[in-house]
Amino acid sequence: MCGIVGLFLKRDDAGPDLGRLLAGMLGEMADRGPDSTGFAIYGDAAPAGAFKATLYAADPAHDWPAFERALVAQFPIVGAPRYHGSHAVFTVRASETALRDWLAAHQPSVRAFGFGTRIEVYKDVGLPAEVARRYGLEGLRGSHALGHTRMATESAVTTQHSHPFSTGADLCLVHNGSLSNHNRLRQVLRRDGIRFDTDNDSEVAAGYLSHRLRHGATLAEALESGLDDLDGFYTFAVGTRDGFAILRDAIACKPAVLGETDDWVAMATEYRAIATLPGAAHATIWEPRPATVYNWQRQ
Amino acid sequence: MTDSAIAIDLAQTSVRALNERLHRLPADTNERLWRIGNPQGAHAVAAGLTVPIQIEIDGHVGYYCAGMNEQATVTVHGHAGTGLAENIMSGVVRVTGNASQSAAASGRGGLVVIEGDASARCGISMKGVDIVVGGSIGHMSCFMGQAGSLVVCGDAGADLGDSLYEAEIFVAGAVTSLGADCIEKPMTQADVARVADLLARAGIAADAARFRHYGSARQLYHFHVDHAAAY
Image 1: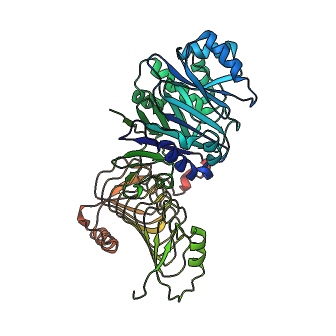
Image 2: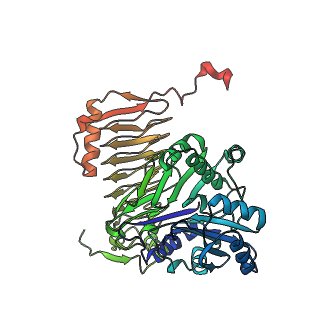
Image 3: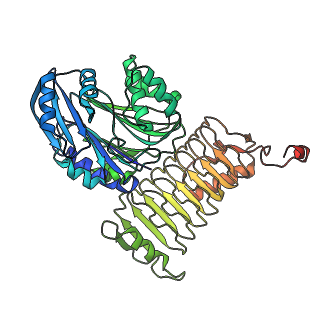
């Protein structure tokens, strides 16, 4: 199963209600994915030249102050870090590669779940209401957000196996479905320098998109080539700095529904998630076609 | 129908409580007209009905609305999710908007009317139900259809009627591709009359003479004695 939700505010770059609205949508998808919940929210931009890094440590007693001292010795940071549950958001003046390489070499117990000018990624085991509360989702503002509720089918139920998976700076992917060629594809991508943290199939789809983008493809081109290269069932939602994209495989047995009003565009696995939004009863509602990329970007 | 409607608000009442109440109605019930509000995409609204009552649902429904319907007339004033009227036995199920995948799947009888579009696998494994779609249908529709008619006023997606048995398909618009063992057949006067009758029953205005007729080539499902050694 699994549930996906996405919400894009058309009028507001920093909608104060974005987190609350996303929490409502995620709540409706609880019984599609009771194992874990995650969300990516595109909020206030980091200052020029700086990036927000959403970092995770599994150990609840992780020594974040010591981590901060070590980080600052290596890279300048802007402002104070923000802590939510097992996550910390640092604004750092470092490239994604430099930060990830440094983490892997010196802080192996800390992972970067998200990196970019606007993206913050939070994910954890548990029901949506619980995870939303733990990470203060209702208080988060922004222009758009994606969320996922997971019913695990092919890999473990852990925070790291939860969605969204980061696919590069300001990019993330959530997936409903399963891929059948992920092991071979992971090997190929690893040889070409793509980093994987888990044995999860959806993470391979995320890595695949990163790889295509790195080779110059646009997001739409990367998704379109995925129709040939990713074998399996999927509805993907991909968050970008300025919007999001949706793709279903050609068989399209994994559900998806889109809704649009003058104020928002919403995507969900089931309409009942969209029904929680203001004005949903009068929204234009339609089902995305198979093997077709849908893309919304802020102008 | 002279009864006044019994109003149920699904913001106040659970689908389970509603369906239990509907399932307990005797065949000669006087509670014959129901108006259901605030479905909010809920699943299995008015599934499993067995008596000739009329249900009007105001809003979009989730999965399996009016599944297994017998005798009842159910109208959704909105869109429907996956599996609308799945395994319908008799009666009429109507959606004024669109229906998601597998509408009227494996239906045995009755009439399903989708005034807008239906997505993939409309009428998959249909076994006697009649389906009228005002708009277009998605891919793999009528897959392994065994009996009944599928009438489509718009276009049909890829692999229409794949592995078809004896269901009959009538499409007014373009067909992306026919599935294995599905062929175009002559549109006889009897076929035009059959389509006209279904359109009239569905309350959808279209010229029956414009439809083209598709059916089984009967090459796939027959046992050929000449091939006995191959089995």
